[in-house]
Image (tube, rainbow, N blue to C red; front, side, top):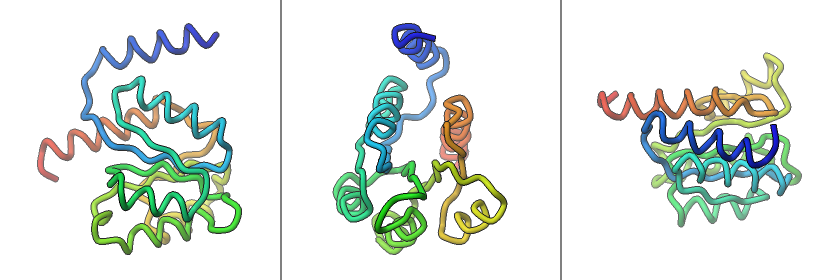
Length: 146
């Protein structure tokens, strides 16, 4: 699928169902991946920001107040587990949903991400439909007051 077809497909899908719109922070040291995910989230109607390292992600999260953080685990320096734990300590981020987006999909990685405070664990390359399903479920949970 070419770039134009992908964008058209995402735009058509974004008008098919009207899920809740979120403030989403994308954290990935692969800048191309971060930009692609940011643009994808924006095409789907969300407000997105991105960071490529832990310290800047934490500072941006304090200002941006994301409802959802898509966080790579395998970051240099401060890894995604540490970033998630640090963000969880911020009172203003207590209700934030953390989604691991990583190449690490073994059982021990999923267990460790849960222990660190992640709500979901997605393995790269991210299945956009799986991510959209998570966002739909979260939106329905908010509507139902869960």
